[in-house]
Image (cartoon, rainbow, N blue to C red; front, side):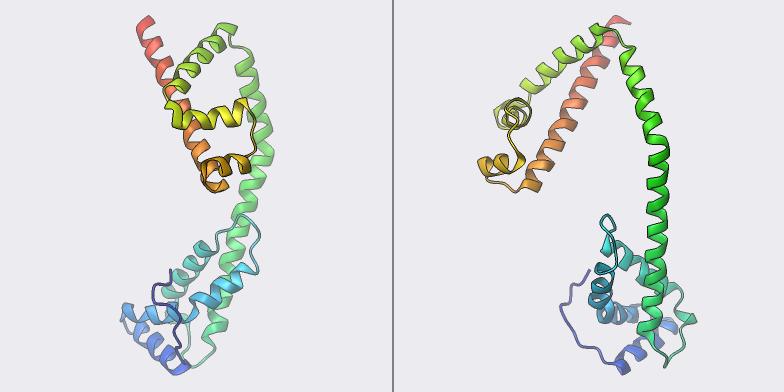
Length: 200
């Protein structure tokens, strides 16, 4: 967010910028963002649990503050007013995440069971077919990408060792594996669709 680097903005400058923003000068709100961006993000970082994006909550806080700026009384404590908004934004995000987690906790086991039953009902030929398609799709990856598949799924090498072998970070290796799995899935599904089209 911060493209201007650290900058000192005193209370008088801040109040003047808020007043101009309330008067319709939208660009003046940038002064407010520059003044509070770092302390707000630091405060949020100390209060958010894992899984919550600090930048996202900070962004929402500034948007909410801007839209409600006419509720702020010039000369009062703007920092307290802003951080109260941040507190409520954080509470809203926590509530949303709890609802999502509750939904998955309730329905995920049932959905998983249905999916397992659906797969178990498929004939054995279906899996043999998919395996053959997967083999061709892995071969189509080429040597460079194919080595990741071999390391991870045939040799069962840990991610850290894979990263050392290819000179990348563990995060980069994880992303590469995800992209490969996605590509293989699309390749298999494409071959299945093609085969079904030929037989229909």
